[in-house]
Image (cartoon, rainbow, N blue to C red; front, side):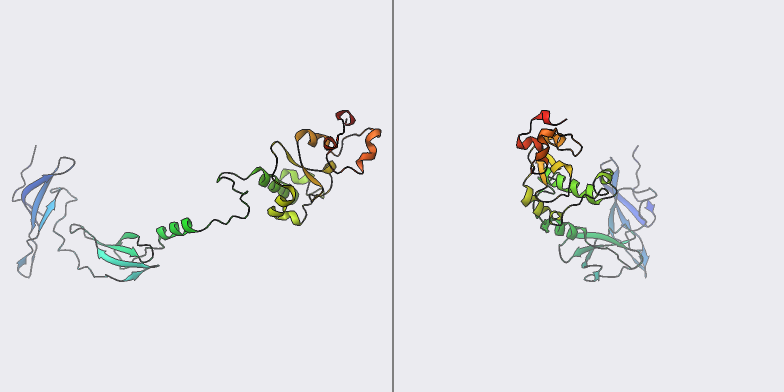
Length: 259
């Protein structure tokens, strides 16, 4: 049932006539402000969509405390007050602030006389997008996904030799296995070893010595098994142990020579 509010007074607003409908099928009323100051009636016209409700304004805004003009004032890190944007029915002071660097705008309320907009989030995004990504070798984040296999082997090598929190440190770093100074830099490791072939892992000759040029190779799983320090060599092949510079299967040792 529609309620006729014509010529009814709500606070200091006099309902004149309906002028439209809201999205929720409510009535928008044209009202006149009847606030009198110094013998003069305000008389300003305003459209109200919630007339008669508790949240409806009581005037056109003329009863509000006079709002100070801060146009052009600077706040925070590069924010400048541009214009007042509050609606007349709101008893608050809203201002649009514009950042002098990127032009990003925000809305702030002045309640205590202070505006604290903080740093500009848009500037941070622009700096992050324009900042060149430092690329030394392109392996730590290959194809913008995960590290390359070569980088993974290098990183695991350093962790098991230098990180006491790793479970494998007990068999490597605690046992005296070290990574040479040259291979602390991945670029030097890559120059000496080359990219890791598919299906291989990093191993040392006879599983002994430090990780250094001449003592480490890319090995397949069978070669890794044949390269363990506790393998038993038949006497016929014992003389090769002192001169071998590659994994046993790489130099042609038959599989029966290794127990």
